[in-house]
Length: 249
Length: 313
Image 1 (spheres, chains in turn cyan, green):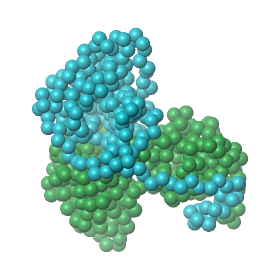
Image 2 (spheres, one colour):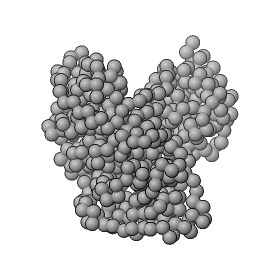
Image 3 (cartoon, one colour):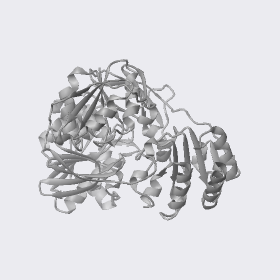
Image 4 (tube, one colour):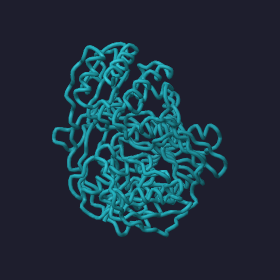
């Protein structure tokens, strides 16, 4: 079984982001970039399925400028077999990404697509669900456990009240939550080997997909900051303050 | 015309739907509320009493029992043509099916709307709430998930809107429900509670969380936790408040033994009043707290319980 996984290039989660003064977006120049952590979990899950002998090949996809080739090499070092860059300089919004992935699925015919539940830059949490819809495949979102038994996939999902378990018919789309696995670190030999693995480049036009944006970002601003409060000396003083505010039952 | 998708468990309407109705009312168009489930007529009756709802659409069939996204999206596509807007709460329920329905309609959805500026201009958080994007959407049908804590809850009335039955049965048979393991709690639901008491790594153990729960019960509060406390196994994952957990905005949020990682702040910084209790005076949580107490939380928690009990007498 072939598995397709995604790897979005985002600002590293440890970086404190800065909103540009002209409100046009978030500063990305000279900022450390990394694989979207949820996608890293997707790659890890696919690689583990290959190690268990369930998957035969893991194909990783990233989209954007040639800078994403670095992201793809990292994914190859983590164990993916080959990479595809969908090359574009244009802004890609989730619906366009889902359509591009759908076109790639038609070419590559994977039985399973695993992707992060959201990217930590735009926090959209849409693309996996949209891809599943476009393909008319079942979806298992926010997955914290996957069990594959033949043509059936059992998914434990993290929901607001606890956990839900569903069964899907393959082929299917899975989106990962944090507790699905703990991704490995790429070893030096694997980083070296990754340089030799195949990386194909394709354009949205070659895939026949219109990537025109559906929305325009008018401005990006910093949220209102709270003013620093006061430090109190005792529990009694705190209870008295809260009582004065009228927030106690 | 606006279609709002109700979140429910076939018996009770989930409160987040009430916040979505308030958001929907900003568009000044008739609001229809879709209740899709199985044997869920009781929910439709509750929905008919919400202020601002012009009509309830009841799609009652076994294939909607667990609101599987494949079937629910197909149903929404069947109804979508009459509407300009389709709204759902930005909960794990709404986030699951709404983008799928949008893709089937070839419309780009917007998730986690915090503010409605104009009929096509919305504000949503990006980078875990560390920036806010104002966006203009051109889609003919605007599919939005609404962050419940950003809008007040709609009121319920004595009067009742008409309930219309929908005969569309969309059973894709792509997925099946196996089981649900919901955390049982007598405390209020985390995302709807007026007061939330949360613990972090500083609680040190699952055992110690009992002290915090005692304080929560004294306040009639819900109990939350930071990701560090969840990862350490002190509490179940659905306690988690933060970017990757629940977003809360109660009247009072008490953070105990929580350092204040960005990921946690993203889930609670819109709370009305924030109290932080931590032994480290330089913990980032104090940067956003209205009131701080520096000290040993195992001394402070019992002292708080004593002071609260005294106050009640």
